[in-house]
Image (cartoon, rainbow, N blue to C red; front, side, top):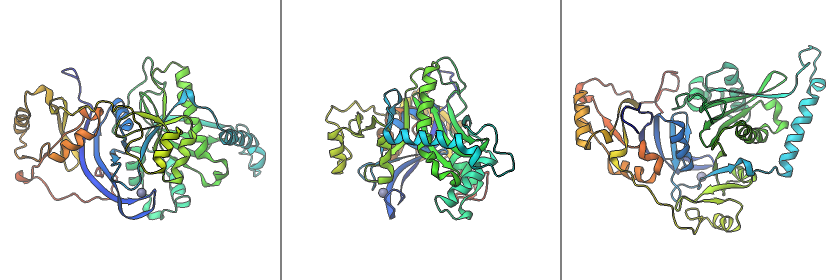
Length: 404
Ligand SMILES: [Zn+2]
């Protein structure tokens, strides 16, 4: 980072948390992940993070601890140019082509609205709150996932699917036509919103985050359609000149979870060995054998790629207070950590506590090269100045709530 650059990446470590698991339906706290609040991230850094096993939910980023957590999550990616449609994927595409061509006759209720254009159309826009999308989300969550209506709120929707740590990065030479950042892709049939794909468009590819659809259209397998359309998006942007925009990231591959195994069907996908940091093909015989016997931590016998340690001097330090970023500095600009503490002193943050704890250093080391630029937390406690109320509790009902 050159001097004078605006500091764009700042993350506060939020601790290692255990919770129940949606993949194996465990009712005890068997799922273990490191979590962090991303105040700001460039898409390039986030791209590194997801290759390192991180995912985000709004501004909250997390990484399951393989070897400790109940369901081993492997980051999975597809090099789109190598993708070949399987038989069943062809079938899905044929069905949607047939159905959308036929919709005008089938669904004409006499109102005359189901006329002209019944094609499936997909538009891509920057992530924002759109009432129509939210209403679809509400229907999807309650009817497909069985959520209680009172558990679905505008605030939780925003936090989960609208908020992001990215600044909008505009398109430029060699980038996708959309630029980079967080996006919503609307799927419309005959003008009617039938599904929304929530995706991150990143320097190395498209990361699929969530997809929700109209339960009335369940027969169209829109979830499968969306994966194929997202792959097609990458290929189309490549054709239009996007460089290095190669991958489709589907989130986690969980070998032991039948619901998640379908991701391997987007072949030839690769997953990353968390120990050697090598990418291996998920349909490789040796890899499958290791996964079958639960050997999740070592998927490759290749020598491990070097683990970059975290030089504290090269890190950015986010100064957070109760989850809110209140200051940030690059330690490189200071000869020592002690000097930067002087800086905070000058900002009247008198009691600097808990900086670079052992736990944070460990996290720093395990987070991979991307973390070089973003890790480190200095918690600044201003309680001594009598400015703080104890307001740590999460308030689901407030849209202004920034806590995670
Ligand atoms: Zn589990």
